[in-house]
Image (cartoon, rainbow, N blue to C red):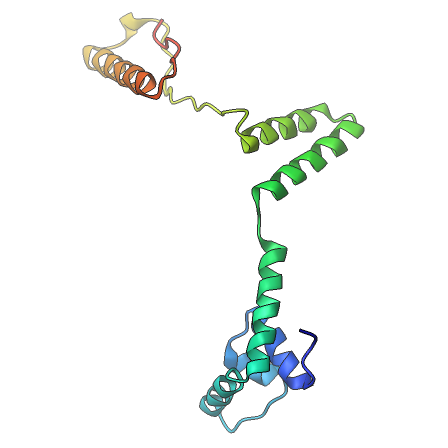
Length: 156
């Protein structure tokens, strides 16, 4: 649908799409009202116009399409970053982009390290700490076996 023939109607719709309230959009479009309540009623009435409704839906749809982030867009963006970084011989950012593409496509799974303490000598630990460490390790191994993945030994 092309722009509305009535410039005030078009301005009203444009302001709504930008996020203005009905009353503020009504005023921005150049409409006059005796008070804010009257402006609110008139703005609501203007929204019942079929052409205004259609134009508003059209512009809202375009706004969503412009801002909608999809997996394909994210992958395209990461590829653009990769190509740019590679051409600039910026290999760190290029590798980061490759990793991100891998994560986005599901070809690379990032693993989180839930270790909160590196233990080099168990003799430095108290009995409660040893029990907690063993319990956590056993829990992680059970969870890994349920998921069908192997956990590397974390107790040395």
